[in-house]
Image (cartoon, rainbow, N blue to C red; front, top):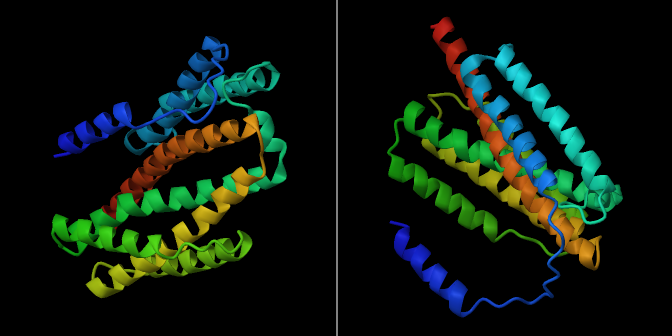
Length: 250
């Protein structure tokens, strides 16, 4: 289904996409790449396997400790290299650190909801898969129209308040909850989350200038991939725990 779209995108990438920045070709530190691959992969694997093996499994604990040790060496290396793969020194900028943290928390909420809610709608409310997709599409479309460009603090705070209301409504939902209640809860949540993410990310990236702006963008993208994988894994763990408690209670 996606192959034709990918082909069209590939053609446009070859014919129309142009570099707008100067290519510097910096030295690639392969040890840093190896450390990041091993460290982040081990971290994601330890969290992902915890839903099957349990949090107290020796393998899970060993993988997690191994990941932390490797990532500590990775961070130390990035802070001391002349041309690091990721310039982690920009975390010393308070505005960037705050904005990045808000984006990651918001991104984690969005991914966890998009992973868990369709299962709840399909299994507990017995709705069709197609309807689940329609609900997600509608809420995403509505959320995309709520972006506010009037500064960062006001929309970010307002977004988190709206998202909190939606999350609280979902937390109070039961298998007997009406469909309109679930849809309304998700709409509220998906309005609040994007309303926070857009100004927070802009706020973070606008605090760095020059070559460091590319590092900031790279760090944001990297963190989103890691946080996305970890958030989905944690959601899976919580889902498994909830299903286990439900079976014991039944």
